[in-house]
Each structure stands twice: as structure tokens, then as C-alpha cells.
Image: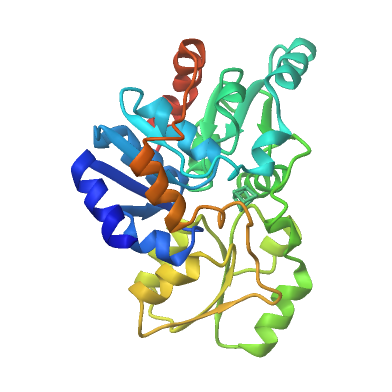
Length: 298
Ligand code: SF4
């Protein structure tokens, strides 16, 4: 199956992008594996005629926004992100009608339709810098992830209105899971994702995006790490750092949607050139702006 995928990939000059949380065998056939910000940048600069996006739907939509002339394949349409469904365009319009002076900052984990109603997007990799760059006298609403919004607000000491959304996967990580892991591995550094509850982030050594975690463990002289995010990232961490030890939390943290895309799905999508991501002209035009603004901030 891998050989067939690689053959079709060459025939169509396709680029396979995979998120750090996808299955190990998907990461191994990808041209590029990364977090949302890194994958967005790759999609914007690649100019590939065909992009096979292995991740959840909003990420494939973002690739289409940034590379509208490419055919973007999303191999399994059932791979959606529940958090991205927690803020609809209608709800944001209603909020704006009540709070016309508020600047709406959307985590990239939103649908393309929702992005048409927001001022600027961010990912967990650039959220802090991005919010810090916004005018300090503006009232801010952060959506849809209340945990990420609260963690940024605490870090920057800035008041931010929070939308009541969350990642159901990261929300399962509780403070006692961190405490127990530290007792089992007292010499390990604890890294968690900023989608975790603020009480969990408070117990960690660092809260980082998956891309940030990978850079941190690579550069750190430490040898042991406790990883508080979706378990798919352990594959790349272990592959790239064979001399270091990585401990998942117990119970394991897995996102069922990120695991939906299989090698068979990738093969079928390349063979059939389907399912493609399609967005209306209006969504392509209006949702691109907050993404472009995001990519301007480092
Ligand atoms: S880990 Fe959470 S935010 Fe990421 S795709 Fe899964 S549900 Fe969505």
C-alpha cells in the first residue's frame, strides 16, 4: 500500500502533509509533519498541484484557503474536530451585534465559515505573540478554546473574554495525572499543551504547541520528558531523539478524529482524486484575511 501511495504521489506531483497527532504510519509516508502553524505555512508556500491533508477537516480547509489553486484532498471526511464545531458564524454575528467594539481572535481550530466572521486567527504556536501584538485598549474575545484563551490571559496578564469551548481530548488531562506522572518519573521535565486546563498548565514546566515541544526536547540537555498532549506526537519525538525517553500520561490521551485517516484512505483519495475540500468563493475570500494576518505574526 505504501508503494502504491508513493507511486501515485509521484504521478500527480502531490504533497502529503500530516499533523503530529496522526497515526505513525501516516507520519512516515508524509512529506512534511508538523503542527497547525507549520502546516499552514507549508500549504501557503508549496504551490503543489495536489495536497493530501492528513489531519482534521478545519486544517484541510485552511490548506485550501492558503493554496486555493491546488486540489486539496482530505482522505477521510469523518475526521472532524469537535472543538471547531463549538463556534458557528451565526453565534459570532450575534455576539458582535451585542459587543460591536470587541476584537474577535479565533484559534485556527474553527471552520472556514466561522473564520469569515473573525478579525484574526492564531494557533497554539503563535497565540501568545499574536495576542501580545494586539492593541492593549481593545476588548478581546478569544474563541473557541476557553483553556487556551485563559492560559494566554494568565501569561500576558491581560483580560480576555472567553468562549465556552474546549478540546474534549485535552480536557481529559487532570492535575492528578501530572502529579502521578511526576511521582513515577521524578527527573522528567513536564511538557503540556496549552489546550489543557489552566490547573494542569500550572503544574507543568512548560506549555507548548506540538511544534514547540519537538523543538524543546531536541534542544534540551535533559533526557526524560513527560508529555501531556495527544499521544501521536510520541512517534516523532522518539524517532528524532533516540537517546531520550518520553513518558505519556496515564491514562493515554488520544484524539479519535486524528486517528481516523488510514493508509487505505490516503491510497483511495489519491487514486480517485476525492474527497476534495471545496469552499465557496465568498468563504475563500473572507476567511483568508484572518489567516494571512496570523501568518504575518511570528
Ligand atoms: S486533539 Fe482536540 S483540538 Fe485537536 S483535533 Fe482532536 S479534538 Fe480537535
